[in-house]
Image 1 (cartoon, rainbow, N blue to C red):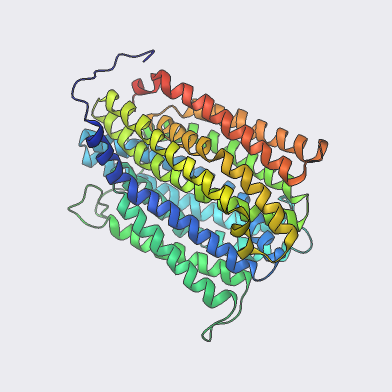
Image 2 (cartoon, rainbow, N blue to C red):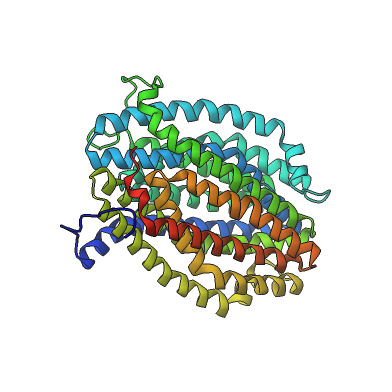
Length: 455
């Protein structure tokens, strides 16, 4: 391997390394897949209200992620630092860092949530909301962002737990919360068992209730004094640069990446919103399908990141490389299976979401494209997450700028409008984006310089 000397002594056998990966990976994969399935069911329930309702909810996705971008960035740093401290066996430093970052995200989350609610309507109009979708979009966005503080705190705690390899805790938190979401979706969207029919507002309230349940479970997970991560109010939460410097260094680069990613996704969604409500509704359904394939990659990436961070904390760079490559190979196999799944069932997968033949046919065509990019999508997610947790976040941010912030949006506009490719043209830009990120992040990973970064 170029650029480094790796000690190959004491490497685990193939079966041992696979068992280690699987032990952490299966809860993370199950969590991600179940969340994606819940999102599909959520969309299916909302689809009973018509194309406008699907579009209204879909239009809030990127503005919501823009608000959450800074917290997602900080959580990259949380996982990276906590995994290193876990590998070093430094429990005191890990908990001190977690206390301080929880105070920061709570205060910052409350402020940003309030601002997002206040500017909800102009933000969503800029996102592409039209006369038939703006009211529902504002209602949905205001409710879920207003209750988003619960989600922000639980996401930070789960990021720390994943750094310790405690993926079962994060799985329990998110799966339970999403089950609550589904139950209250059924009760509140259509009004069943005496509950009021609230339609889009009901979907937002159900999501917020899920956030609160996740918050309660996550907080309980750090309340046990015998666990590696334990938060007590008897200890100081006062931020100190000495404890937060490594986290901020990783998180700041990740924040730049999130800006590029979210602005790119926002503009991409805006381009598609210009095609009309039916096209955007079809796109929203297919994006949920894409999230299902992404879930496998995300679950593997979470487990690989934890093992990479812990290995680097133990000064075992060879182990870090091993687990990264192993996760990527497993991801390729899963990606191939997802390709077959989408190609064979493309029409059947669209039918539950609409009785419109136009939407079903268009969606089936999009799913052919999705099926073809699944292996590349899963592999690039794993490579990029391994680089992030190692601290190579500046490079990953640069790749995101080139491939998403510039590449996807420019190519999408060109293919969608200049070449009159419509929604199909927009999705071809996703192919360009995913393959480009796979090549750039894969080459960076293979060179191995990321194993020498100190946090």
